[in-house]
Amino acid sequence: MKKLRIVTLIAAVMACIFALAGCGGSQQSSSSASNSAKKNLQPITIGVMPDTDSVPFLIAQEKGYFADEGLDVEIKPFKSAMDRDSALQSGNLDGAVSDMLAAAFAKSGGFDVKITSATDGSYKLIAGKGENVKAVADLQGKDVAVSRNTIIEYVADQILMKNNMTGESVNKVVIPQIPTRLEMLQNGKLAAATLPEPMASIAVYNGCQYVTGSDELGINPGVMVFTDKAVKDKAESIRAMYRAYNRAVKYLNETDRSEYIDFVVEKSGFPPVAKEALKMPQYHEAFLPAESDLAGCMDWLTGKQLITKGYSYKDIVVTDLIK
Image (cartoon, rainbow, N blue to C red):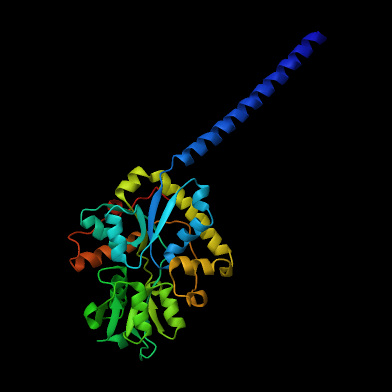
């Protein structure tokens, strides 16, 4: 009887050993599968602009968050929306920090892009240091710099409309390149300009005057876009990119700016004064744009007859890549 109990005990012990070995094998298999998935991620190329929207991507690259995901990301900087959009449509980019208007223009022109998330962009109307501008109405008939048919002009028009003015109430001066727009404003060659951050904060730091901006309007038309081809062929790479992006957001929100400001100013192509002037936004993990923001942009585009028809949310927004 005792011999039977010993044999039974040995059998039980051996069963546990085999079970544990099986668990270890399962874990190893799972880990191998995960590593294999990482190795199979396709590289992606992203276009960025000299604005705060692009900073999390630069941080994710610098801190190795993309690499941790097994993802190879090439980041290409642009100074104007026109150059960025040309690169996207010529196949030199998979995605870009962009806006709803650019996405609609591309789609209307036969080049299908998809909005995959919103960004934390902010766009401000800034008056020159020598201008007597206390309110938007004081810019009546004066030179205001924009980039034509872009998010910048859209925000400018929304500001004017809120103040019972139209696009014809001011003299729009078209200056596509953001750094040039800033320089001309600071040199007194413009009454005002619409600028993204951090160029708006830099202008104010150098003596120009803040008038109003997209935050006060409660609009956020800034988005991340990817080509339809990239969405179809590189969905897992895009998801991995967003995981790294979210880590970068956490880092930026929790880390003292002194730890990263030198890097951000250098890599973003910001003027050196941005080291002191730049006010970092409270970033959010990747999130979807508001339907009201898209509807507002479509109304503006169709109202100006820039596109023949507006696009619905489901036409242009992909909702499953940020999860």
